[in-house]
Image (cartoon, rainbow, N blue to C red; front, side, top):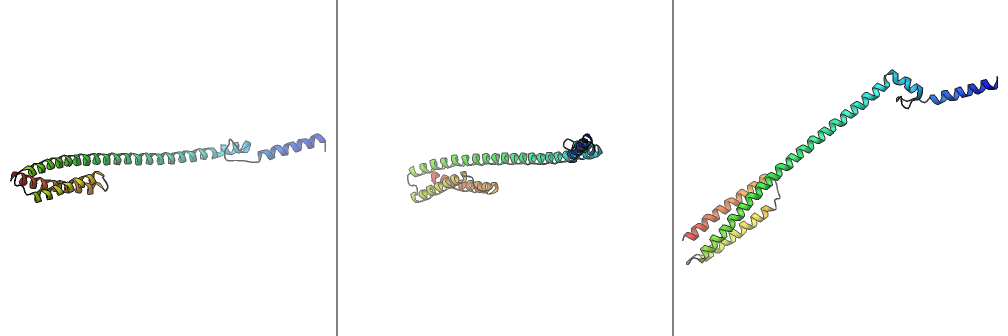
Length: 167
């Protein structure tokens, strides 16, 4: 064999060996990968990526909806908290008024001091219960029940103090 012919054979073998690594991606597969891309593999790759993108977009949408729900729940809780704080502030004002009436009853001549002392203690207990409720632990239903119980206690004390003042 001639030296030029054997060099050409070696170069051809090396060129073919370099092209032998194929990939489904026509950008990385060399000549044979490009030919494979023409056979539909490229479109399958695009379709697979589109499906993956759609799946990720669906997940993102679900996360956004969950975040929106959490924000709405947080806003509702804030509204309920504000309402409870308003109710407790009204109870505070009413208790302050009860204290004034109790002091007035004490100044009256002939008042039953033992009974007034007991009412004063009850007013202090009511005030402490209101302060505990302001801390706001527990669920909303329990909190509403507690506030209503405080209102009932306050109303009973108001009536009792009014009777003591009118004597």
